[in-house]
Length: 120
Image (cartoon, rainbow, N blue to C red; front, side, top):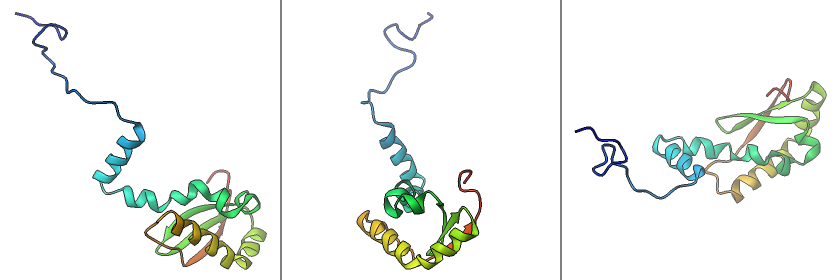
């Protein structure tokens, strides 16, 4: 006897579960594969503008954390020099945000690279 999926005795039994938010599913998947800490490490990128302010944020983009050093891409050599003078301020603001967000790491140094920040 041929059965269609909608007949009684469903040929494709379905698990009954409640809908979950996509964010929760993604969070569980990241945790399952051990990627949750790596993603959390870069959460500050989403808040870069509020951490650094619009002047710095418009001319820079955080690239990568290498050890405890944050590499920041800047729009031109002049901004690399200007921001190198403000390194302590950048570290203070960033580490304050990381502490407030209960991040498991702090940044001890920043390094600047020059490049196109719009494409980064």
